Every structure is written in C-alpha cells, then in structure tokens.
Length: 101
Image (tube, rainbow, N blue to C red; front, side):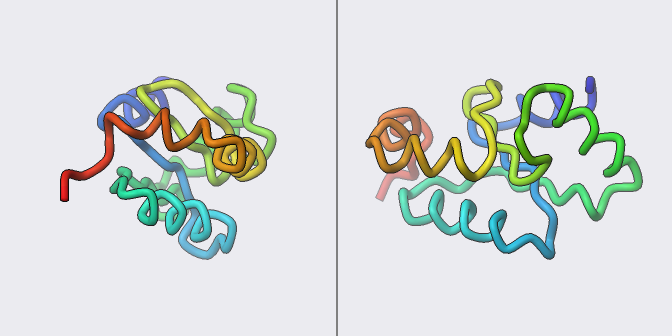
C-alpha cells in the first residue's frame, strides 16, 4: 500500500491503469478532454502490479483499475469518476490541474 500511496502523491492527478483496459482508456480520454494530463501508472507493466491491485482494493476501489487519485486522495474507479463528471463536480475538482492554454 505504501508504493501505491507514494505514486498517488507524485502528481496532482494520478490514474492507476492497465494497458489493455478499455475503461481505463475511457477515463484517460475524459481527463485529456477536460484539459488535464494525469500521471498514468500502468500496473500491468510493474512486477509488483498484483500487489498494487490488492492494495487498491483494500483502499476501497470497487474495481482495481482505473483507480483515480486527485490531490493524493482516492476518488474511485470508473463509476465514481463518471458520476462526478455528470454532476459537474469533476471539472471543479480538476481546475487546479488543468493545463494553461
């Protein structure tokens, strides 16, 4: 769990993903569309990936990936992120992390 928390605090927006996950891809595209370039950590490329998956589940993720952290805080997986987006809350949360045009 320490490795996950360390990586989650490296940048304002961090997504734990798997390179073959279509829902992960959808969340990454959503963030790019909002103007945020998150740090994407592909756990299937890490030798400790399975342990990281278990740590994310223990932290409360409904699905291990995508797991989205904003400001070092776990926001959730696809369902939670899409709910925040549809309510307009996600855009407000991401304002400090949006790239300047």
